[in-house]
Amino acid sequence: MKIFTLLLLLIPFLGFSQTTDLFISEYGEGTSNNKYIEIYNGTGATVDLSIYTLKLYNNGSAIANTTFALSGTLNDQEVFVVANSQASAGILALADLTSGVTGFNGDDVVSLEKNSVVIDIIGIIGTDPGTSWSVAGDANGAADKTLTRKNSVCSPNADWTASAGIDAASSEWTVGAVDDISNLGIHSANCGGVPCTSINAPSATGATICSGATATISATASETNSTLYWFDVATNGTAVGTGTSFTSGALTSTTSFWVEEAITGCPPSPRTEVVVTVSGIAPTVNAGADQTVCAGASVSLTATGTGTISWNNGISNGVGFVPTATTTYTVTLTSGACSNTDQVLVTVNPLPTVSAGADQTVCAGASVILNGSGVTNLSWNNNVTNGTAFVPTATSTYTVTGTDANQCTNTDEVTVTVNPVPTATATISTGTTLVAGPTGQDYQWINCANNQQISGATNATYAVTVNGSYSVEVTNSFGCSNTSNCVLIDIVGINENKAESTISVYPNPTKGKVNLTIPTEQANVSIYNALGKVVINYYHVQNGAVIDLSNNPNGVYLIHVTTEKGTSILRVVRN
Image (cartoon, rainbow, N blue to C red; front, top):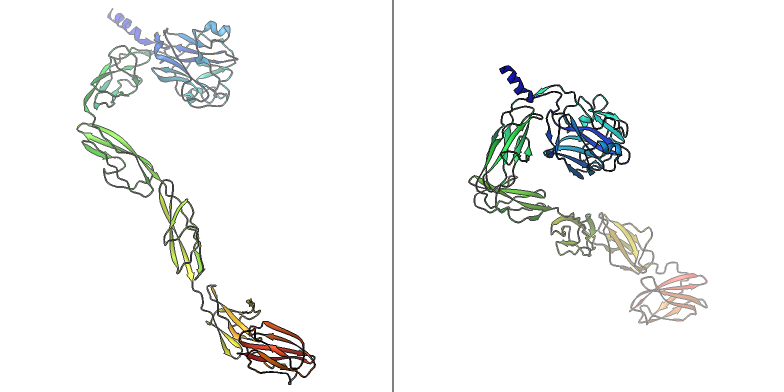
């Protein structure tokens, strides 16, 4: 009898062909609104549906678009069908409820949650596959198809990649034709016997916190295939968390939580009380106001409060440092067993890009213009104004400072090289030969009468062939040039090529007027000044004609007398 009694006591704890929990056993994505979800209970016990929820995620959304909380109970070996309200009569006849949670297409996600934890799913939350999810190697396996869970599946699966598989053999699903409802309303699982044993209460550790802080408490399960559920009441109630740890909200007084251990289809363990002791009040700490600096500048973070102050990132309170990037710094104030934190944001603005322009080279006395760029607010040292010409006196490096809208500044430099200008001289060497100076330069002789360069006259010496004034342009190795003063040559060509020896003028020198003696009846006369410029012309003059220089300045004049025998040149001095 004892043996028989023991067997009777064990019978409630033995499950045959039991699943570990509820799961989605059939999914219909048919024509028009022929859509439904079938949920199967093979746990060996009646299940309270109030802790289960169906959720729909449309078009890759990471947040559920529709949530449907289940209610009532579901007996062992029965299914619960949720259908679209506009589905066919055949589907609605097998449905337990209708809900908008069935408003899915083949590329949407449907999840089954238990105590707000996903335990089974079709699709991947936050992902849009395009037209359809791939199932059992069928790229369109979830669009216009009927998916039926294989009888060998005994547990829900929150990993869709594993559940869908890569082919028919590896998939948990059989892909059927559109609108095939031949298996709707029935399901079975071939799982084998799973015995239920008495589950010991989990062990847990409490915590001590300061008033207003949160607490993280943890527990250790006694079984390897169990789940821990956290509660804020000693009996009954709804789980407020799952897993080996639980974080509370902010607490101001000592509070108890409870944790129980459960294996699907078996009675849960007794609940273990976990106490969070609230001791003391978190100190007040102020990290100070947010700061904004320019790159490379130093900042000092000074937190205030009563207790021990420590900063992250290796910062010392009240000690300056140079931040390298915009960063949020956290200060922790510890007073006894309690601590509190505050944060301050240090914004690091980049320095503006400032350009002083390319280096320049000029000759002494020439002007330059310095144009800085990068920002609108620019200033130069040495009293230079941006974009305004000035004459540098010596080779110098000039610095421009640019300031941007954040009042951050940056600088750049430009070197202006000032090359010397030669001291050009032109002197009479002998007679009509001019010599340029200084030596070792490049030369170009110039006729001062018309300020034109004399072709081919590029040597250091120049033999004058026509009376006049001459200067020389001297260029040094830096390419800098200078022009000498004009030098007067007035002794070229006197009595040269005299056509008739009897031609003469008198008096010479003269106060203004001279008499012309010619052997012929008439001649043409042109008078040139020392610069080689014609100042007077006479035509058809006769012997004894008077040439009047009274209106011309004192100096040397050349009188060109042209007769039928040629031209004679006479030198006259007016004083």
